[in-house]
Structure formats: C-alpha cells, structure tokens
Image (cartoon, rainbow, N blue to C red; front, side, top):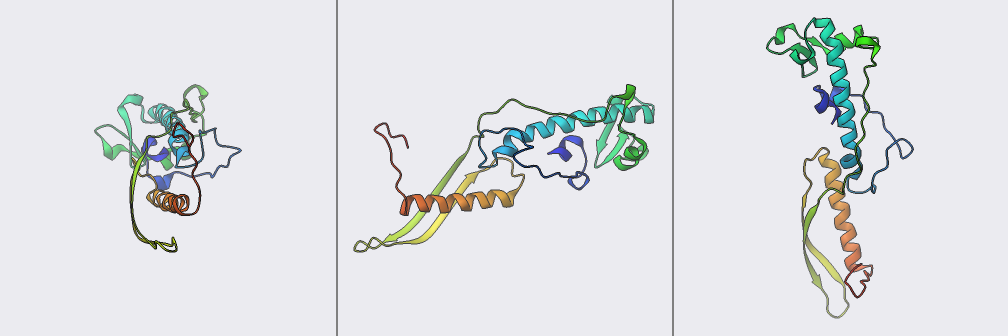
Length: 183
C-alpha cells in the first residue's frame, strides 16, 4: 500500500511489524479488517511523505513540485525521464528536513470505516449414514469475493479456516437462534 501510494517498488519499503500496542483500533481482528481499516492510514501517510519529498526534491531539481513525478523509485521531471534520480540518491542528500525545515514524514489517520462488504458461497456434498449419523465429506467448494487481493496466500488461509469453522458449526457445534432468527 505504501509503495503504491509513494510511487516506488514494494522492495523499497521497510516493513516494521506492529502489535496490538502500536496499531490503531480497528473494529475486529478477523478477515483482514486491520488492512481494510488501518491500511487507509498507511496510504494517507505515504501520500503525505511523497508530497513533502517532492517539495524538497523540487529545490534539488530547481523545478516546481508539480512538474516532478516518482516512477519505479525514480524522481524525475515529467516528460524528461533521463534527468531522473533514484529515491536512494536523493534520500542520501536529505537530512530528513525539507523546505523551511519541514520534516519529510507523513502521518495518516482515517475515520473508522464500516466493515468491508463481503460475500461468499459454500457448496458442500456429504454422505450421511442414516443409521449412525456419520457424515462423510465428499466435496467442498467455496467462492469468496475478496476485493483487491493484497495478500492472496492470507486470503486463501482465511477461506480454508472459514470452511473448517463452517464444518465445525454444521457437524459438531450447536448454533442457537432466538425467536427472531438471530444467532
């Protein structure tokens, strides 16, 4: 998210692993909601860093900030890619301060969003022994609308976990509903 907002490669971003003591509050912890809620703050912070960095780089290039762009980790004048310099080259020249001693840093916050919309479908083929009640799982098909898959492996893991949880509910646990049909 930060690399995309800033205009560089993901390999150019250093990830600092946070924990519940450093993350902002999010509605719940399941289903990638931290990415959905806090991820917007990451994009806002990276966008602010980019804006401040380009203001600083504009002095180096002696050009207006709006005439610069960052493409694949290179800061360059629009329309003149051969005059570009890498982010690393420019960062080495920076002392972390920009024009008028403004720090080249970004902060982002967002309002607490509603939960991400989600939809999935499960199709399960089972064989039930009428005498013993034994259930054999023959096939399980699952489809999930995940939106933009930032981490496909994580999404697949969540889908598998959801399938196992659904089987647990169906076969081994009792779901109790009130008179209004609410769980």
